[in-house]
Image 1 (cartoon, one colour):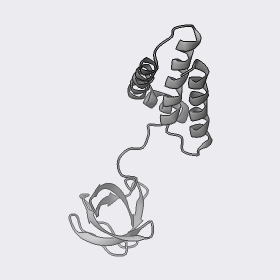
Image 2 (cartoon, helix red, strand yellow):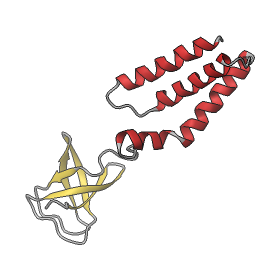
Image 3 (spheres, helix red, strand yellow):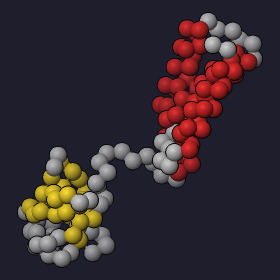
Length: 146
């Protein structure tokens, strides 16, 4: 592939991802690898097509493993979310829940079974925080706001 083709692909991938609302920088990193591959051709180092693809793949994997998270933190100011998105949510309680007891709660329009994993009883009408999700069971404890 000609060097400018790699540059077009690289900048195109970057633009596509940065136009999105929740950029996770995967396409930015892949685009960066394509741009570097194009720059190698621009400086006069000619590689066969398979060599260009190997260089591109190696740069993409290396950059993904070692630079994506630090780029994300630098630009977003936080680590990328991983794990269950329900952790940290707040639920309202309709009944008293003793430590280790289960109850039904509503979260995001669905009814869930929740278990109080804290050491204190949770009062009816109060709020609790989801600290873990075990399949369809929410593990809750007293909310820091309560």
